[in-house]
Image 1: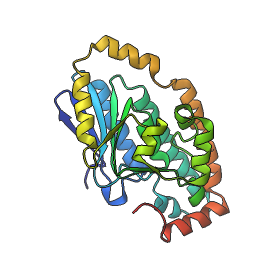
Image 2: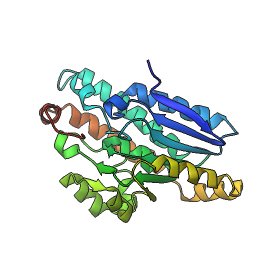
Image 3: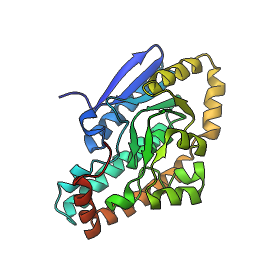
Image 4: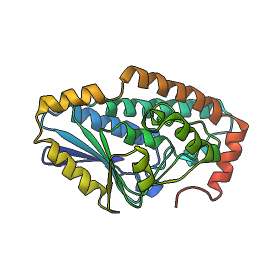
Length: 259
């Protein structure tokens, strides 16, 4: 079985790639556990000066794997337990990225949807290929927002815009996401990782103490972020075990979603 997160080195940069491409890198507990293990290795390696968080396949990630949720009996304790576990791991991964000792740059092509958004928002910089798309999908599937859609996004683009995007299930182009301030860099399609690696290489020439101080002053407040993510987890578990979520998953798996 292939590793769910592939770790490579490019000089002093560690490249972590989500590697569940056959499922659009949709999130399951095993993938998030692999990501956390990779981040722990990075944290312990003093030779790593920057991290690029990328992906295999056409999409960065389409968020939680709806098929995995639907495999449990609707409205069951087993479904609730699975959701608790998945969101606990997702929140842990987001928090770990947000406070990692070295800069992290996300490289995104294709779709970035659902709870996977938080993995990108937690990074210091995010590069989107011009063909990338961002969408929530919560009000279509019948889920409650997770992955920082309420705990992080409003701080970047404002509460009103965040509310409208999620209620209307708006799909944002890479250019629109950049204009709103959701991401930091645009790259030609297929070149997001190359640009992220270039940005990472440039950071190693900066004064380490200044980089660390800048990040410490500007990064997410870990305590406040943890509280916001926990609110999302509680609401998600309650909603995913509802009758309307069960119906929404059946509709979604019947033909909607990312290509």
